[in-house]
Structures are given as C-alpha cells and as structure tokens.
Length: 63
Ligand code: SF4
Image (cartoon, rainbow, N blue to C red; front, side, top):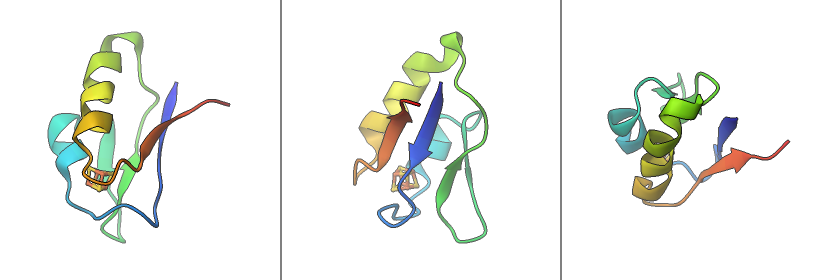
C-alpha cells in the first residue's frame, strides 16, 4: 500500500522521514513525499510516522 501526504497541510518538520526514511523523503518544496510502496514489514513503522505527524496529514491511499 502507498501513503499519501497532504502537501498543503505538511509543515515540513521531517519527523516522518526521521521515523521512516525508507518510506519518506523531503521534496524540493520542503514537504514530505512517499518514496516507495509500504511493504508488509514496514507497516508498523509507517503507522508510527502517521501517528507522529503533528498535523495528521499522512494517510493511507485506499485506491
Ligand atoms: S511529519 Fe507530517 S508535517 Fe512533518 S514532514 Fe512529515 S508529513 Fe509533513
């Protein structure tokens, strides 16, 4: 599954990247972006990143 970051809401604090660098990277606009699809093994880490985001702008892409 993929994670989505709401680019308008993201503060660019990089907390998600610190928790899950294999999933998130900061882009040229200073916002977080999901780099890779989340593997089964990474789901707990992905959830940690979702939970740590101060503005709750990370969500699962249900499509
Ligand atoms: S933790 Fe949330 S606000 Fe901070 S960079 Fe990641 S997506 Fe953006």
